[in-house]
Image (cartoon, rainbow, N blue to C red):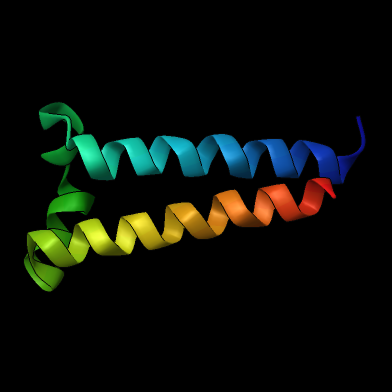
Length: 67
C-alpha cells in the first residue's frame, strides 16, 4: 500500500468513529474534557453538528483519495 491509500483508509475509519461518537454519545467518551469544552462553547446540538460535519468531511475525503 502506498501512503495515499493508508491516509484514505485512516480518514474513513477516523471519520466513522467520530460519526459514531457524535450520534451515539457514549457517556465515557462524551464526558471527556475536550468534548465538554466544545459543548460549553457550542451547546450540545452545536457540538454534535460540528462532529458530524467533520466526520462526513473526513469520510468523503478518504473516499475521494481512493479514486
